[in-house]
Amino acid sequence: MSQITKQPTRDQVPEELTWDLTKIFATDADWEKAFAQVKADSAALKQYAGTLKGSGTALLQGIQAVLSVLRVFEKVYVYASMKSDQDTANAHYQSYDAQVSALAATISADTAFMEPEILAIPADKLTQFFQDEPKLADYRHFIDAITVNRDHVLSADQEELLAGAQDAFSSSAQTFNVLNNSDLKFPTTTDEDGNQVQITNGVYSTLLQSSKQSVRKQVFKGLYSAYGQYQHTFASTLAGEIKVHNYSAKVRHYSSAREAALAQNHIPVSVYDTLIKEVNAHLPLLHRYVALRKRLLKLDVVHMYDMYTPITGTPQLSYTFAEAKKEARQALSVLGDDYLSHVDEIFNNRYIDVVENKGKRSGAYSGGAYDTPPYELLNWQNDLENLYTLVHETGHSVHSWYTRHNQPYQYGDYPIFVAEIASTTNENILTNYLLKTQQDPAVRAYVLNHYLDGFKGTIFRQTQFAEFEQFIHDSQQNGQPLTADHMSQFYGDLNARYYGPDAARDPEIAIEWTRIPHFYYNYYVYQYATGFAAAATLAEKISSGQDGAVDAYINNFLKSGSSRYAIDTMQRAGVDMAKKDYLENAFAVFEKRLAELEKLV
Image (cartoon, rainbow, N blue to C red; front, top):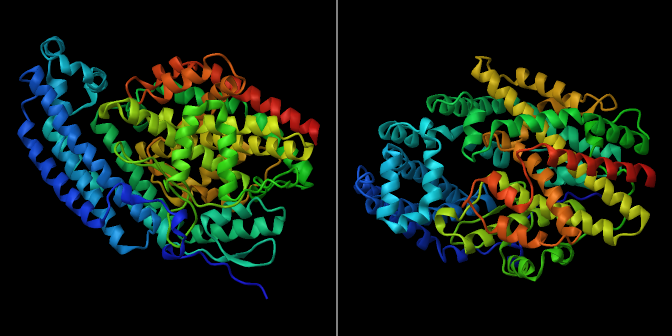
């Protein structure tokens, strides 16, 4: 008889496969004490309001006081959020998460005075402040990053009102997260061995790689049957989030939410436009790959559930978590011993929450704060994709380690725009390693297929998401209600254009937007695509042993944090992202590996 495979509850997961959050706070009581203290310290910041323009010393003291509160709050926040993520049905930690979300809004209101006051200081007076107070030099770029957006910061009273509304503004995203991770009930499906398994996001991604089309089709339709029942609810939550993005941009005098979002990282809008233009120009490469997939799978048409199964057979490239750590370490050895020492620290000290459990947040991420270890959340499955996920998240984590140990707190984080470059450089290094070490034609073909699928999923797919994101923001801004039907019609058309004539127009894919959490992140997804393209250049330099490549990568990029603007950081690392060259280079690699796979099979 077939058996139903169920997820373990949190208390059934072996301790060594869970992260150790006692490195942040030893007990919940310690967290509660820190929470109360940071709340009190935040309220005490009011004494600095109105003082920053007095002198260079007063400006320095005000900035340091604000950052001191934010530094402790980061620890409080990540403990609560990660405790909640490990079991989203745990009411105790759901309460913690709700409390820190509310506190975040309070702190935003308490610190809202700082930027307007800095902006109110005339440029010549600010110059004098730097001369009068030498210690202020440590915050020069921090202050410059504020004053460069002078035209978009409101008065202190207005900023306080907006900051106080952040908790309410985040309600749509919070509702999506609870519905998507806790309340949404998925049916069971049948795996390749005939076992009935509960569909989860992790199981879904694994079974879509099945060699049996019937298995892929059933899990695809099963997943979307659940999302389809709530598509109008998801439309409401997404519409609410988009309204917040557009409203916030409007009141800050930006022409669009996109301009406002990119300005936070000082990224020109032209970078976004160039990405979409170049990807659309190279869609024939994606169509060519879909045609190859159709031919090798011997299909009349390629359904969307046929897009992830290997087209070259399945050689023995399965990894337990222990095996994956060894393979990842070997692949990353081209980055040198110092880099590897931090990989070892992450792998061997319970910084990683490894396996799926009931109620655990789906997906994967690297998290933490300036004064905590770089933690990773995974939902481990024994396949190549999860090896790539481990290498990806470890790229984030080592980036965080270098930044936090080489920059002061004010520069101890990095823009999302460059964060994805660190992680996808690791992915590209892993691909180069596998193609170098795997000589079996069947294995090489499998790795090439995996790379092409990864490219498809990162550059083509994330740019597709970026186009959709632009569409829904423009629609709402122009007064078009964001109904499920309106979004699904556009998404279905967009998907058909991207994948071309050999791809079926499965009706389920039109509601894929319902399950993408990144649409709540305010113009986040394009950075996956730009990051992957830039990473291809960096990885090629590192893997080929180019003189100075590792040194430039670690010292000019990973250690830089936010001490420079992202565009400048990447130029120093060896990639000029103000030009389209890096995108063209990436497509050239894709075409080369596509041609190699076509020849090999």
